[in-house]
Amino acid sequence: MSESKSTSEVTKTSNSESVIHVDRKRVATVIAGPTIFFVLAVIPFLGLPYEVRCSIGLLLWMALWWITRPVHLAVTGFLPLATAALFNFVPVERILPAYAAELVILLLSANVLTTCWTRWGLDRRIALASLIGVGTNTTRQILSWFAIGMILSAFLPNTIVAATMIPIVVAMLRFIGIEDLWDSNLGTALVIAVAWGTSAGGATSPLGGAPNLLTVEYIQEMVTGEEFLFATWVTRFLPLSLAVMVVTFIYVRFAFKPEIAEVEGTKEFFLSELKSLGPMSSQEKWGFFLFMGAALLAFSRPLYVELIPALTPAYAFLCCAIVCFLVRSNGENLITWEYAQGKMMWGLFYLFAGGTALGRVLTETGTAGYIAESLLPYANQGGILAVFVFAGLTLLMTQITNNTAAIAITVPITISTFQSLDINPLPFVYIVTTVGNCGFMLPTSAGGPAVAAGYGINLKTMAVKGFWACLLSLIAVVIVGYFLSIYWPTFSTV
Image (cartoon, rainbow, N blue to C red; front, side, top):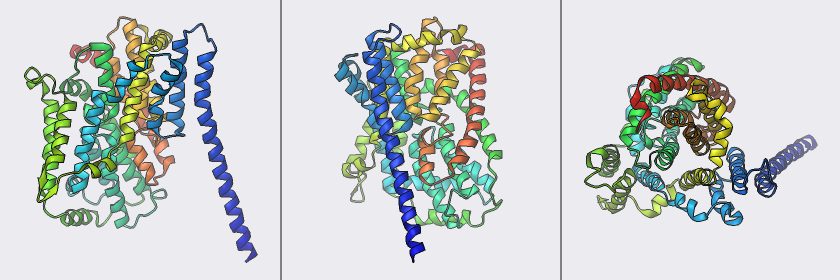
């Protein structure tokens, strides 16, 4: 009795000490961010102007909080507004439009359409139907989940794809008796396969996620001054995306060694789950056709741009999203605002907006140009060393912070650096954005790994094997991108 009580007290004491340690670490991080900003703002440093010092302080503050996450990523996204209002280093009205940018509307509208899928089970139907022919071989299972995640993430945000598919993987694993994913090679491998697939295919189209839309914003504002078409994106990024897909697919084939070679019952599980959904409902059909209609309008814009010049992809998706709220099928609304608002990824919108605002701050204050000057020696006439430096920096940032935040920091710097050298920045932007989607190592890397971590996979496995996936992807993208820029002139244009 006394031994049991003693053990219980020891456990409580240990837990309390752990909580205190975590709280102290969080407090230290919370204090460190604004302290760095304030010190740089008030103390002259290397003769830098006040505006540049504040911008660098804001960059370091946001990077620190995005990496350590003492608050939600979206909360950090509001720092540009708060600091600009308090310290007046950039006019607030210059960065405020970032929080209602056209591409924020696109994210929100696409989220409404996919939320409609979730309400009526279309997401599960698509995933299950895709997996019926996979079979029971565990290696084939891993590759299939990876491939499907990769394909879907080309057209849907990776967080949505991961949040849709990983629960199905976990349900299937429980069906075959695997409950603890941390101690299961197969369980960890299958969930990681989905997460990595969403990252590997993410750069294929602008619809692949917020980092891509952020890049579109920077190209339009800092390089071309005109609309960057979705069709242009696909033609420029497809070779780079294929390079990532091929090397990661081959790596996944050999990286994971499940404890069992064959799993009985998985095909039957998929069939039974699909049958349980019944025939495709009229609501599912509406959700499918509205999303496909919006995607078709986005990709076919060159055909009608002169007829309806204001109907950009953001507003095409918005129109279809509004229709979702108007349609009634079999006496029920396709979707209601009450349902939708609880499922919306509000944090993603404000993280994206904060990233856009940070980029504008760096540009407006001349900070991006200052940082670019310090990187000029490494950008020597745009050689392969320059490609490795900027791609490597982006890949590193992507692993330790959110990929949207990484793009927000590195793409403006990349553009400013090569513009100052009178070198076309577009090939470098394409390469940097592609590796910026390669979040494989940590939960902070991208939406897919974050969702996977939430289900209790072995994080050590993801980090170690993810390192090699990152390295292979970096080498493949740099080599392919470098040769494209030399031998395919169209690659360097819009």
